[in-house]
Image (cartoon, rainbow, N blue to C red; front, side, top):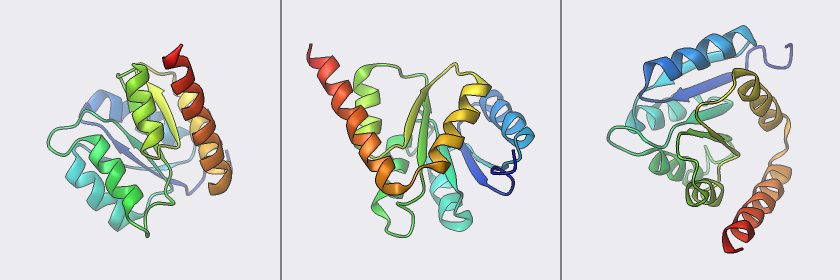
Length: 148
């Protein structure tokens, strides 16, 4: 747990129960958790708070999660922040879109709190060059599976 102490996570989801589930489990693991309920607030929080990782739902009121992901990855001061998509959208197209737009990982709802913790540990322990290599490899596999 020592590796997570002081690590900051921004949870972006419009569902209060999902935010609560994430907060309780991540705080238990030693993370500092902040929350946003919409895309505009999420971008402002990322710019102001510079979290270590963002958990991002794609279905948000107003500015969609895809747009938030694009904004983070387009900003040179923010693009190094890993974004993990947490979505009920489990279709190949959605996962391909997430990986293509620069997501560090993609988790489908409902998810296990233990799995979430492991994904965050893995994402935070991965060097940016390795994350990019892994992201491209997964994207290629998803596209191959989709074409078969």
